Image 1 (cartoon, rainbow, N blue to C red):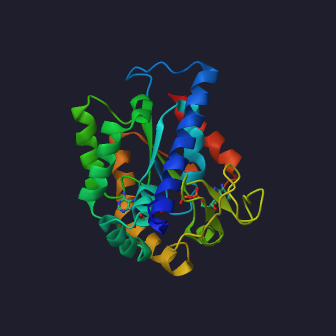
Image 2 (image 1 turned 30 degrees about the horizontal axis):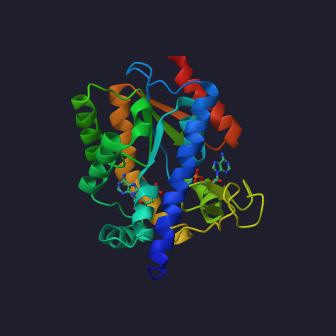
Image 3 (image 1 turned 90 degrees about the horizontal axis):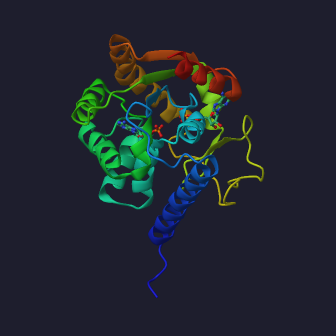
Length: 259
Ligand code: ADP
Ligand code: AMP
């Protein structure tokens, strides 16, 4: 038998997390009879924007379920590389802990590969944490033009920086699935354990006040212009992300059902 290493365990957990998500997705489709592929016109192609802690990772799984689309969270993808200790993971970890951004080329290729190969994306996608720069937004538009597809919505979860410290320093995550909890606002059923798998929850190494402040500086400098980019194309909508999660969800649905 091969020696047991941390890398092997984390890669197995990653695989199990993905399989569980896939089973949940397939069960959902079976129960509502929606496993027939959607036409381009029926698909949801959404961008969820907002500063760290705004609630993207909390709302995106609900959107994924409601619209049978894939949820691509670039931060989760990078953390999976970090857990596997790949070269990219090692480089990315340094940048992430400093609150900086990984290069546009790497991030664009990551998204391209998912859109090309991830079967869940055939019915549409929810992008969470991408694009984070105007260059990424432009290259996403090029990629979609080649596929004769267009984005329908870029929704910005708007919230004051001051409210984010409590959210980020209390956040707990289940690394394999990306599910997030909060020590006070959304505690797990059992202390420090994921509700679905019972596996341990962790605090992200960049979820501290110092790194958060750097991430906010990066967000305002590099990602706020992305909101302006989508304001120009007319697909931007802002919603109040300081409300309780159920209310944020209602506001989100309000955006999609206006059209
Ligand atoms: P993001 O993905 O935008 O970085 P998360 O969805 O992970 O943010 O949320 C950050 C933290 O705030 C998590 O601990 C989450 O449980 C909590 N949270 C999310 N939405 C709300 C909300 N509307 N009110 C209070 N806490 C929230
Ligand atoms: P998140 O999980 O979205 O908070 O992302 C965590 C970190 O991953 C960020 O602070 C960045 O360092 C990096 N990252 C995630 N998405 C991107 C992206 N689209 N472009 C560049 N860096 C990213």
